[in-house]
Length: 351
Image (cartoon, rainbow, N blue to C red; front, side, top):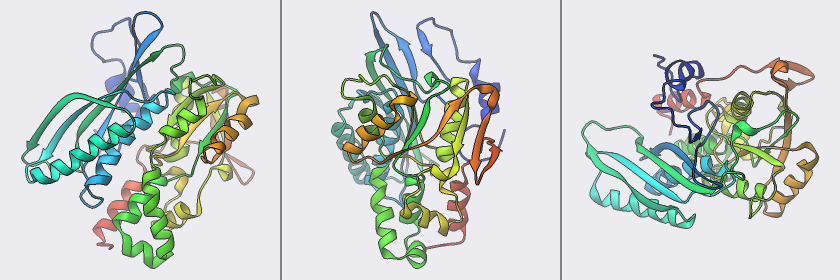
């Protein structure tokens, strides 16, 4: 087994998990698959149940409020790729034995608040305190929603010829967490203003509004064929995953990938290319070519920046990155460079 940090590698997922998912039920329309954020189960009539699961965060260096935000919104971002908001949530908390009951009350109050804000009903789970639990992962959660199956989108539904759009900026979450974790270092290199803006961008790590705006209040804009949350591997990793999930190739225009000055400045301190870094807060959108400008304009009306960064093509063309008039084959980065940068700074006692 690999000792790399981050998600299980693609080839190990295919080898260990993909064809070993318990009893095969016909009503499972979409199960575990590389590059697909959400599972889908057929219900009677035109309805379906969508589900997504993720780890829950408990990161003392960030704070209880910030940890609760990540716990709720990183899951909600995955559900947002369907074009629908999450409705129900289950939370399994395996907390450190040293975590005080008063801190747990604060943490849970924020979980409750953030779920309430986006209309998630918490329906159950498990809560316990575990000896030896010193991870920044405090358990796991599952969000669910019920919606018409004809309107639910999955990343594997993207089509060859679709244009690829990206909202906001690359590396929003990774640059924000680095700035909050190593404030003095970031201030010394890029100044107080950039540091403050990077910290403030932490609460831009939700992409739920991006997705709901793209598809419309009633999910009526079906020219948006698929969406994918930007996490491990950054925007380039998200495009790779969508292309693989949908059986397509992709052409990515390197210099069109959006990078705000704040994210660029913080990533430079840690010698990171923002295009490859964890980027929660951005949404990758595949849409029909003739509707690209309308989708961008619709997002702009809600003050959500969005740009075109490439297109999907036939699988035979592969996944390529166009940079300075050169075409390079994209290979999947199985370990996000953010992790090495974070622990290098941590081990060097950067402040």
